Length: 299
Ligand SMILES: Cc1cc2nc3c(=O)[nH]c(=O)nc-3n(C[C@H](O)[C@H](O)[C@H](O)COP(=O)(O)OP(=O)(O)OC[C@H]3O[C@@H](n4cnc5c(N)ncnc54)[C@H](O)[C@@H]3O)c2cc1C
Image 1 (cartoon, rainbow, N blue to C red):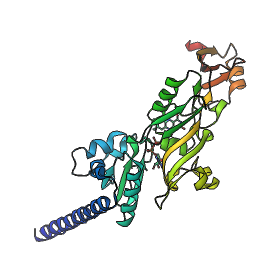
Image 2: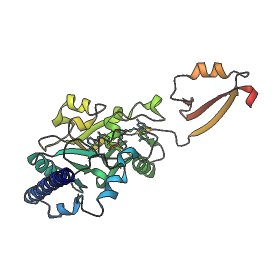
Image 3: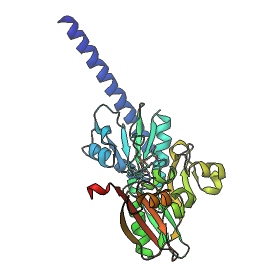
């Protein structure tokens, strides 16, 4: 009985002291943020664990539901900046108070790297930095990192029927993580990866500087297009080249049995992803050919 009481007291003491440390760190962090912020509204974009909105904001874009389990570490503070300067302030103050940073754009990271960490951390959620500026004449677009692929496709389609962008199939994937990891999709065979079409970027480096392609240099610019940008800084926006696509896209499904040449067709077109094969005809029209191989007995 006595030993149970001692264990309970120790556990409680540890819990309280940890809670105390968290509160102290948060207090210092807030103080730092208000001192260094040029923008008085910074407190409005911070969500601590006692905020009633904290859990819904944290879980909102988590695609891997495993990480909703309570055992996974959560950020001490979530920041949803509206301005780039707010990111710079958070970076400076997190460094000062020994907190790591996790950056989240679309939240589709399978390992939860954008919203979990083994050490105390702040999560910067870029959902509010999602503006998209399409220049149809120059066939380019500036897209902020918090935008999703679906938003990008939609904005391009609003501006032009013959422009598109080669990226993934899932509309809720964020461009922040997607382009920095490569980004492949249906039109990859014709236009390559998303990263191949990135021509400039705005990145905040560890010193809080905003760099573009010229000031970051070609080596870093190369690395953030495939190497996972979180290793190098925080991407604020990408400039991408748009690609010319036909205004009409034809999609069709061809079903063949083994008796009528299924294997030959497969052989001919096998350089595909899964069972989806994309073909361009002479008019540059993109056509989808889906091959379904079935045993004739079951048809
Ligand atoms: C349902 C689903 C469908 C998918 N479909 C495709 C597909 O068709 N094609 C394909 O190629 N991939 C696909 N993926 C994989 C997806 O492209 C990657 O997981 C990508 O990294 C997700 O980016 P995100 O911004 O949504 O994720 P996040 O979880 O926000 O970020 C992923 C990683 O990038 C970092 N990061 C995010 N934003 C920034 C930033 N602004 N600056 C620096 N680092 C940043 C994060 O810290 C994290 O390490 C899919 C994933 C899922 C879950």
